[in-house]
Image (cartoon, rainbow, N blue to C red):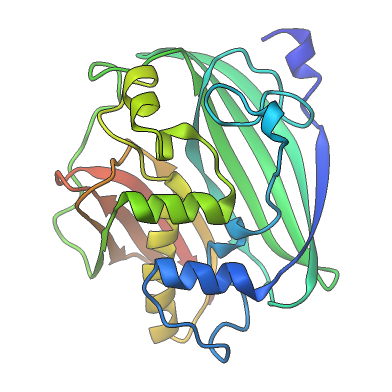
Amino acid sequence: MNDDINNWIGKTIRFEDKVNEYPVKAMAAVFDYEYDKKKYINVPYGWHWLYFLNLPLQKNLGADGHEKRQGFMPPIPLPIRMYAGGEINFLNPLPLGKNATKSSKILSIQNKTGSSGKLTFLQIKHSILSDGEIAIEELQNLVYREEKSNSNNLKKYIRPPENYDYQKSWTTTPEMLFRYSALTHNTHRIHYDYLYATKVEGYPQIVVHGPLMATFLLDLASKVANDKNTLIKTFKFRLMSPVFVGGEIFAQAKYNDTGLDLWIKDQKGNQSLSALAEFSN
């Protein structure tokens, strides 16, 4: 890692947004939920990703659909960018209808070498404030890799636990991925461009968004928390392998001492995302 890249560590950026009703109403439709104003007073767990969107000019998009590495994002030379996971601390509600701010700071940039070649790991901290109180703190982990993947250097698949206490299924379709991309203004071509996803990045099909799968798990955890009359305090998740569009996937959860162990079981029975939800006492 050269000195120029190191200069991005500590860099910050700030966004302001009105936490409007429409994104939540639209996301409810994606989840097949009837929208009820009385129910949706605050932004549901994970739906904060619908706000504070980065809106680069069309001319500033790179070949993969992401914004070119400029401004806040460091100019990491590796071409392929993936969402690796993160940690979210839910400290206070994020109410609808109010103004809020989001501050982001680059915490670390690390180079490593793995089975797929050179890798760079980028960690960003996000803080969302509403009414002067911190509502959400999030650590976002991104990984950059070399040009093209193949069946030999994709992450090895593992089987999920056989026993679980809760389960909910989701049917992934191109329409679902399109709607989520639109709501989050995610222009990464692996989520909608079949030829790019298969020919350039080496996947067998377009890829389900990592944050969308995390939101599936948060949806399940939220139902459990409501039944127990508690709240989700912390949610940690890690993407283990990609999930491709088409067919039924499962959000599954099992009790632990502080909340839930959760995971996504994909169409082939593999575990693709693991998570931990900690409940308030």
